[in-house]
Length: 418
Image (cartoon, rainbow, N blue to C red; front, side):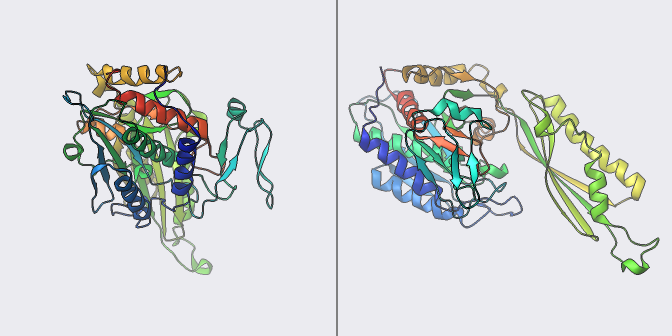
């Protein structure tokens, strides 16, 4: 039987909290070397920090890098339970605009097309996104067609804070100490880089950063970012014969050297890819930004080597030093970190079943802070947060999905489930 009763008050708390979060501009920036990568992320970081203090968490802190930690104290007389953590990130993806988000609420959705923007006729339709058919009768939160929504991962943030508030308000639910954490820069692969695992003090944790209800993941991509720089030579076009080296044209040529059938749109399941994220080019200089992904460690290493070989081949053709590459590892597949620790995954599955949810254990075609944290000594599977169609204007989340995620958090920490 479910422990958490979502009356109208708690439903509104969760909805209003999520709406307040997504309205705060907090996009990260892969070009920045600071942490957080953008100062604007501190706006939501400080907002969440103050919220945690108001609802009664203890030892709430935010460091100079924007990492937030707080604790729901144990309410047991003799607490011999492990400290369990819950983590989410508050930055949004730079893949699409996250500025001036105007969320829209659609109650009792009936499966129709949703015209998100009457001026542009921008429409969210089940004919294009079949997943919408699963949410008939529910309350959807969408964009207005001009920005992403930010359910990745402000839905997770709202769920964790609401679950913490609920537990403090319901001392009859017996539990051990609970750690909560919120990070910047997850969307650019740096969310856990400066996370203080020792200070956090959890034996294990869960990121609330998955998609649809039931998702439970402890396997993910190995990931790296690659930047290819191409050096050209700018000369007046009228006198360029035999002299000009057009870096923009060379960038186009290099992009065609990678396999066209190994991109995000041509791969699925456990298949890896090369993803060209951005090209910035003129005659004198060009920069191509890629991400490299593969679940298999050997194939991942081969992909990195393959890109380096392509740069070497390019230089053989166009002259040494024409192109250079820098590859930075972002995170690793956390699967091997759960050998002998599958009870952590089993606990989440049990908590889902208690909430009436059938767990969907699968591999992530992506990554979470949990991937890095698992290698830092904090085993950290990923649980659904409810959002769909991340990183773009078609993003949406059902309030009912967020309610279920909040309920799963409450179920995980209960004394009688551990």
